Image 1 (tube, rainbow, N blue to C red):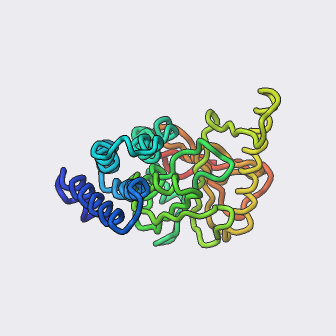
Image 2 (tube, one colour; image 1 turned 90 degrees about the vertical axis):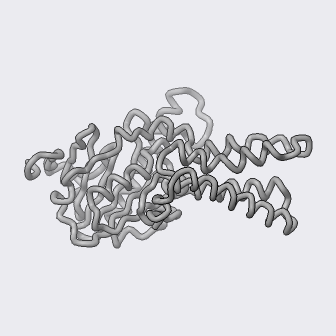
Image 3 (cartoon, rainbow, N blue to C red; image 1 turned 135 degrees about the horizontal axis):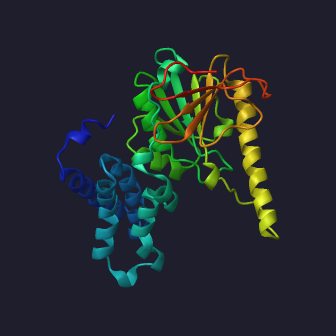
Length: 299
């Protein structure tokens, strides 16, 4: 949708975004909106416009230009103290600390010829979900969607994000998928040919308990229980709603209570566990295993 914008030479994109931001700010303040409120609203709009940038540095330049210039020109004596942190808030919204740890372009998933393994129909609907409620530190959705777009170029890609921050970060990743902000538990999964869950890796799968624990052991037990409950809920929902022949994928760790139909080894490391509906709930079958560059999956 924004491909024609990417052809505009640098540095015109940030200049245009800053000019429009200041124009919108003047319109809002002339209409009676408070300067602080107007600056916050325009800064949020600038975060969306930052998707125009094709690299992390350029996105930061586009998104931080207006709030930094507004603070520079504003009357500091009249500003409320929290507004001094506006540029930092924009920075954390664009790239939160979790993204600093988890976003590594070199480690972006590579699904290779997975398309031939799954034999999805033309224009198949592929939905990536993440993070599931109750599973913090999940793998970022944007790189996952870009990897799916490369592996399945003719599919209809959708990203399902539970929160505004996740939705915005996915937008800024450069994916061309249709992004929806919705509760995964209330969404309809029945129209998917491939549903992929972005889950935490085992090393980052600790989930804090709902209440303050009385000991580190209690905290660990509460976290593992909440983590397991969220995975079980995803399995049950997929079993109810996915049509026969559809695939459920789990990137980060396997799902409980069901045996994978296929294990895909990514070239850069990591495993994608795939379950074809309807799947057995017991471990009575051995999964097929495959890796990029190999032949047909082996039993």
